[in-house]
Image (cartoon, rainbow, N blue to C red; front, top):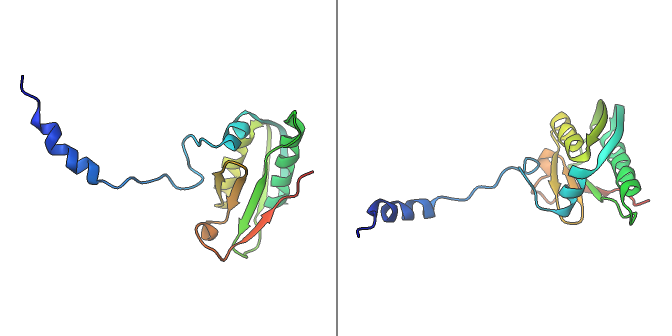
Amino acid sequence: MKRPRLLYLLLPFFAALPLTALPQGTLAEPTASTYRVAKNLIIPEANFNETLLSDALALFQKESIAADPEKNGINFILKTSGAKEPLVTLSLKKVPLSELLKYLSSMTSYQVKYEEHAIVVSAPESVGTTKSESKTLPSQ
């Protein structure tokens, strides 16, 4: 029985293609445990009126601690490039944390990256650079 040769001809072509990653903050289904927690954590109410992004993240951190039986919660790291921190305005009820972070990301152009031990929120120009300032929100 003859095997199709087309597959053998195309295999080197596909092997040479570069694997491209999705941009940070737009991962279809991150595998980090912080994403699973954020996806399942429903924030009862998020009312922000020209609130600093760091204050919004601090609220999310408090909500994650309150919802965690072990009271660990989610760690957030805010990375800026030295620019003025953005203000956010939104009013939502009963929304998963992962969705709220998507909304904040689209409003501010900051990118969200789910890592194993923290959710990193970065200014667009601070992604991949070493000159950014980091701000770790205190645990409570």
